[in-house]
Length: 146
Image (cartoon, rainbow, N blue to C red; front, side, top):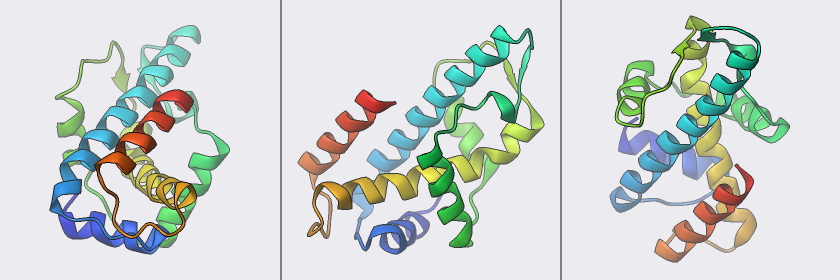
């Protein structure tokens, strides 16, 4: 996902400005949270006796589903191959991703970006450009909740 795409999503989701220094942090955050989500999907698939994760295994909260919908309405496209490449840098998963899960990765990542931007704004409605302490606070909230 390019710098301009991230900037646009943050601006459209929560009227926030991010710059190039925020992109690496955002990219790492989304990669880790996607990986966490897939670890839980893997657990569900294993409990159901499957060796491939399907979309039904993804533990999507109502909030994430709403943010995925908001991302869809923004009519932005993300690259599956870029997301998969990023996931290969993380610890490997035990199960393969089903085609339906791979297809959903861009929407999952987009929904996470939208939710992240909204959380920044919920914490500080006057925030215009997240600083290091803002990122640390939001990342801690996500660690607690997800």
